[in-house]
Length: 383
Ligand SMILES: Cc1ncc(COP(=O)(O)O)c(C=O)c1O
Picture 1 (spheres, rainbow, N blue to C red):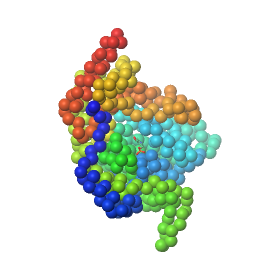
Picture 2: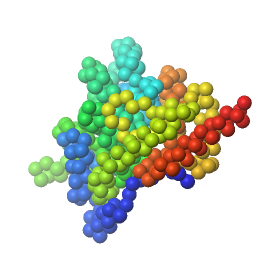
Picture 3: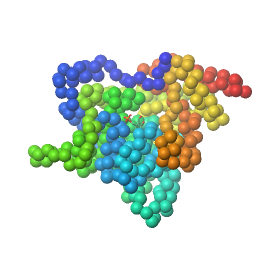
Picture 4: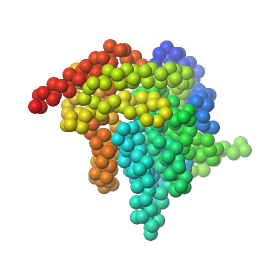
């Protein structure tokens, strides 16, 4: 089996976990603080707050910015569902924005259109547009300079969903350092992992204090006195996760270099095939996933390609989720999938190939040959 992803873990992580277990201090210790300091320093943010996963990170980020019932948040239509669910968890509502056909990131053109439509419709009611939540899809950053310009013009907050983009940058400025807040995931499908895990970055001391309080049951300690100022959550990362994270951080740049190298190998191997290779448009793409688009005329074959390749021992999958088309958003909240034509198209054609640091040149040749043969035989059997 050539797996879609294999976390890059070894003896050092085992030793680090062993030390935590033997210490008897499993939560709220110095390893979490060290991990936060390492990530903040790496991103170029003043603060980092480690949490249980990126879904919790997004949830706390929106709460810390004061987003709640009656508020609206502009968010990409093509992402993992929790990007939009976090908005719902705060009692707010998403306004989905279509994506770019090449990078799969939030379309700035559609963003401007959705803002115009919102203000046109909301002129006489109490609805409030509060924030933009762009996603750095598959490890390539959204057009942050332009998104920040628009946010500034309309006094909107910006939360970056950088779940897949630790180490991605534009002109050397890293994902998570652009918006008011950045949110990262350490799920095993990401470049580095802590099992489950997430972290929030910000440079605002006010937002930081709010995040610390929300993460830990609403607890605040002031001049030696502890109290609970709001009904917070327990979204704390454990020392075991942070111990793994500290080792993983020291491997991050090497892991990114390998992922980029293997992505460019795929680019060459796939040059003559029935798929469009990923477009690298801005900054450093860290290739959390290597996602190709099946040619439009072959779109009807995409799901069969996935099933057949898996049957042949190669773990491929779709890209990510076209959120307005899921049951909850389409049937319960009545979003209309037709409003996002590019996301409809990309969601039907995207195909993720295996990519991890243990992938050999031979593995990649096997993946590409299998993809080729599968497509050719399906074309012939459908003639
Ligand atoms: C873009 C995006 N946002 C948020 C998440 C949620 O991350 P987690 O699984 O750490 O909650 C994911 C997870 O895959 C993701 O891809």
